[in-house]
Length: 382
Image (cartoon, rainbow, N blue to C red):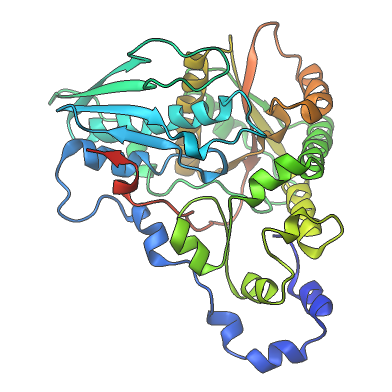
């Protein structure tokens, strides 16, 4: 949250509170090591090729960090990927488009990691038949056969998988993405990359992104969906290892004073509710370049392709030292978002029939720590 310590002290009644707690303010409530252990790579002694590749795939970006993946290993040499229906975002993603995009990112990292180990992946989408429109079907999303192939091409982006981040902090003031970096990003993917860097265009997109964020916070069911994935404090983070993490002395004390809880973020006028507004507004305003990915259609295969290219962009950005993070509220398909979404699509002049799958920030920023991931066995069925 973008709330200053000074503001927090003022709210809870003065600096005497901080003097009393002393060293605990700087050392309490650290990110649990087990929650981010996945970013160290596969566990020592893990030799099964599918499990090793999945250890990397589970680091893929995904909406609200729900990690809605089930990997079935019961068929020898095959990973069958399904969606965990207990981890959907029905309020803000009613057509489940963003969840499928996240699966596309998962599949691409799986492919990259398998190739690094000398395995070619032969992928079949919807092996038991297509899903109904705008629904998550009861059948698998993909079947991926691992085939040993000493000649399979290794992807140079593999070395960035453990370093990749979604950088959700202020970007370097007044610095749009450099032309050379923009060209390098575009060269890493198959879909066309659109980028806005002109000051007037960026100003308009900032305003639309801000409007979309405020619309989401003001829509109770959408706001609650985010709150349900808030993990506040090291204990909640360690217990869930997913969702949106808040930890450190600031949040530890805010939670204990009853100022920042998941329930409080749903109360207009509260400290926590205003914090949610301030955070999204800052993300919309503290950026000098925006990018977006568009597919020629809106099929599930298009969504998967968008996810694969999005994670490739993110990996390439990591290589280049470019900060990147999604800001896709404006693309969500629920009624309260219709106004901001129309203004966005009219402004960027989307071709008829095409779908904007991802909208994101681009720029330069300090490094950020990794986000939690569940244990590998939590998503495997064997």
